[in-house]
Length: 242
Image (cartoon, rainbow, N blue to C red; front, side, top):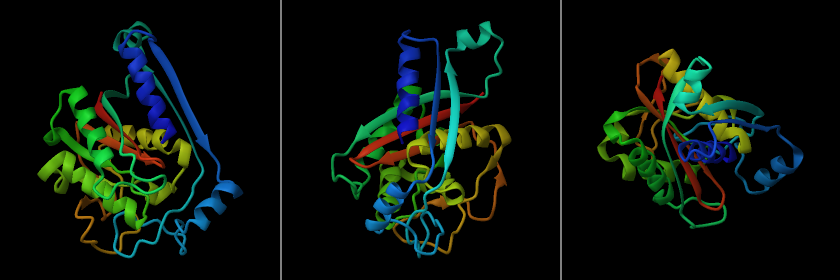
């Protein structure tokens, strides 16, 4: 989630006037060390399939990923006649300090991050039209994320369409937050919600409105991109259509 943290830092710098434009880039290529680390922790899916929020999910799959975005103030974009692809309406970060590698079962840190993003943007849960979830495909993480979404969004958590693009590109670690922000921006621009691939059936601990029947058309005005990391770090980016 280092990429989404960098986006939040860049947005804060622009809002306070410390910068008018920031380029944020991140990349990760699967390496033996990380593969061995996650394999030893039994976090990798033995069948090589990521099934976020699904019954029968067995873990995550690492993936290569590179992404870059340009964040700038509205005034700076106007001066150079830049095409605006989307707006970063709000962002939130929070830690739950629960465990070095396990999320808090109630998703408390994630819930605070989402609330902070909504508060900063002056928006309500009802304004969110899509959630690109962290969705790693591990039993504990997906259940905790569901609990955090329910705590932050209330009844809206079971209505808003949700998918994890990790089900397609895998977990790209340091670049995942930035790559998934790009996916979220693309979702708003294309008006098509990404599928939550690999779904086998409902898990009672993950009662979300998952996009399981392939990409379908929608026109959300706001979307959330969520990320979490070891040590209890959580980031929520609220993206608005241009």
